[in-house]
Length: 498
Image 1 (tube, helix red, strand yellow):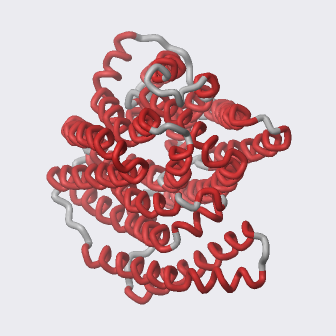
Image 2 (cartoon, rainbow, N blue to C red):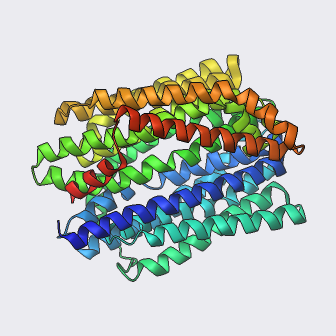
Image 3 (cartoon, helix red, strand yellow):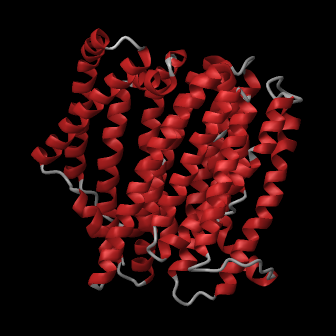
């Protein structure tokens, strides 16, 4: 790789990480405003709407996003293929998103929770799902040309617009539908910006070619089926809850920590998206040893990110919920603690799931997804009526960890890579010690802060900020002390893959 290209890769990675960090902070601020404005019951209705919309929003992808990344990585792929793929996405969006309000009406026959407000909200939120889907396609283009500043800019425009919209909605008291409208409009604004920007690099045109589209669907169908199966356990919990619960309040209690989880899991998706091109390139070039090194280093990097997050969430789940959502969501703390375990599974599952695609083993993985989806759905219907949101949370843990393990063993079977167990043990030890220290100091710090600050929101914010700072310092010091992996390895693995 030339020095210029190395610099491009480093800058591209740094910009994308910076944009994602900024977007995460703005997302948490927006979530906090929504939590406090809606309260647990109305937030439950909001969660039901988004879960329903995101199911069809994800289904309409048809595996085309991952396929686009692969096509863009190929230097000999004709533009007509890209145009046909873009057209196929538009058509699938129209079909699947039309199903959203229709499904809400059908579910209304089985549950009184699907009111007219839910149906109207689901209809409005289809714009949000469409915008998210298109932004995903544009991000693949920007990654291809090492211009991730557009992804970061689109993220920030989206979040700032949402924050501005939330201020207006809360000031005018426009209710839950106003929140859904603000979410949809802010997402579409970023979509328009990214569409215009993408035309500098690739002009997405409407191009109907039945032959090309047939080939695209044949290539993408294993991913599409896998995504559909994943939805059964990743989104099925909210839908099943809505069928058994008598009010939206438990769904709101469950949905609040779930929202935090959704914000956090954007990081592994971003990182593994960057890694898909280099791993695919090395695998197609026959450089198996390089692929092994990339996977091993990527596993170390994900471990450095996932394990301290899980430890931190387990250490202070209730203070985190108080800070982000308010005291109405105290019960959500115990749910966040359970879902934090699932978060770790999602981090590793995302990594190895993308590697499965890079190795072109989607069809093998599909059977794993099918097994988990069927068992998880059965467990939802067994445990949710008995244990409500706690049953849903533990089934989520089961499904995410199981998927991560299946993907891991499939990749290992194909590539026979070795895990750097000593490094992961060091990272785990640092995370456990950090989490233990933060947990032990939590009560004392909250009491100390309360003596200086009277306002509860400021108390919660100051306590979480101090505990996070302490945790970061302890974790960083232990990583250095234990001589575990470093961030430089992430740069190294990306550079080797190009």
